[in-house]
Every structure is written in structure tokens, then in C-alpha cells.
Image (tube, rainbow, N blue to C red; front, side):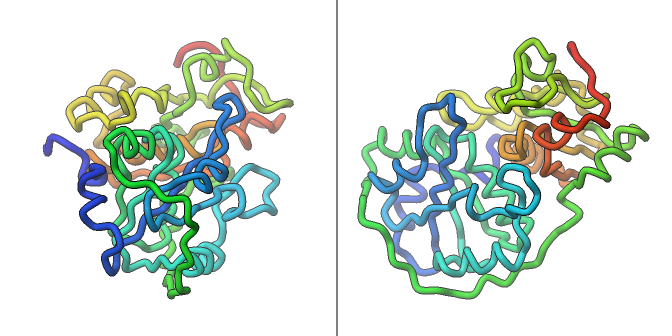
Amino acid sequence: MSAESRFIVSPDWVAERLRTPGFAVIDASWYLPAHNRDGKAEYAAGHIPGAVFFDQDEIADKTTGLPHSLPSPEFFAAEMGRRGISDRHTIVVYDGPGFFSAPRVWWMLRIMGASDVYVLNGGFDGWKADGHPVEAELPKPETVSFSPQFAGHRVTTFNAMRDIIASGSRQIADARGAGRFEAAEPEPRPGMRAGHMPGARNLPATAFSKDGRFLSNAELKALFDEAGIDLNGSVVTSCGSGVTAAIITLALESLGHQNNSLYDGSWSEWGSRDDTAIVTGKA
């Protein structure tokens, strides 16, 4: 097993490649109200030179009634193309702190057909701390073609999730904090029940990085072992609204695990219904 994730790149690695043909950078910063941060406003005030902004609330399927649902491949491809990003580009995604919302866009790009996609270690906060350049000028990319090749099997729907729980056929890894998972803390969205899906294991998203930097592969494996996740089996990742679940997906893929999917509706869907099974307390 390699020491570090093959999907994580350093600020120096990115700085060496800025403005080179076929290289693209995406600011995917998105925050919960409790963070008191505005990703779009921060991007406008300063970003990695040449980076384009990915608004996770806008590049979404707004017909579901759920937050930032996965958009159709055609819509996603059009939005990427308008931002000058092709499925053939080498793409680096970042957010403010390092590993909160960026892995979601990393995951989206990959299931839509881009293969050469990475996440910036340390995020934009680390980029600035290392003294790398920042610009406020908004880029004006030329439109290119993004040819989507949607890997639908990497997305779990509500009906599939219900079948998985009924049969116990797949492992479930929940990225929410322990308080929400155990129903010791209320959900941040009104009208939503607290607890977790039967059989789910808790792997809080915050455990996968330290000071904005992703853990080593050995440390990642230890997290899965401690949570009782068998890496030889299939895994569905989930969270509050489908964003931080991708951090678990990133960790799984970093360890070479490919038999995984992400429950896009996550707890926003499961916990808001009155016909779904919910468990409280520890797994």
C-alpha cells in the first residue's frame, strides 16, 4: 500500500502547473450556515490564479426538493464546458479548509467521465499560508466540450438504499458527526428526524484530515478497521446532504477500493420521510 493518496496533490505541485495547457483548477468551496463562511464571496475576493468557481447549489438538479442533488450528465457537462473544463483536462479541486466540499466535486467529475482529477491538500487556506499567489480577477474561459460518460452505478438512489437496508447487502458508512449519528444532537435542517440508518457505521468526515491535510493511507485504513468496515466488501457512503459522504469515498478510493457508491439524497432524504427506519444511539 502506498503511503499517500494518489488523488491528493500539494500546493507546490499545483503552482508548477498553473496556466499550462490542459490543466484546470476549480474552487468548490461550500459551507454550512454554522461555518459563517460564504464560498462564492471568498472566491470573488481572492482565489488560485485561473480557478473557476463551482456553485454546488446551482450546478444541481433542483427538481428533487433536496439540497444540491446530482445534476443530469448533460447539464453538468454544459456547465463544465462553459467554465473551460473538458473531461480530458487534468483537474484540481479545492475548498477553503481542505477537505469539506471539494471531495464532492472530485467525485462528481469522476462519475461524469473525467479521469485525471485531484484534491488540493490544505485547501485554499493552506495555499495562502504557503505564500502562493492569489488573484481576484475573474477568469473568462473559452467554452470547450465536456463529453460525459456517466457511471450511474456509483450513485445510490432512495429505492436502492431501502433495499440495501432491508437486505443488509452492503455496508453503510455515515460521515455525519457522532452527535447527529446517535441522535444526541438535533439535525441542522428543520423537520428532520435524528439518528441513522439501520446497520450504518459512523465515520465522521472530520476524522479523515488533520489541519487541512488528508491522512496517510495507513491512517485511513485504521479508521475503516476501527469502524468495522470491511474493505473487501461493498460500501455505500452517506452524510447529511451528499457532500461530506464524498470524503469517505475519497478515502476508500485512495485505498484502492472501487466497489462503492454514494447515496446522493443522504440524510436530507432519509431523515425527512416518515416511512423510513431510523436507529438512535451508537451503531
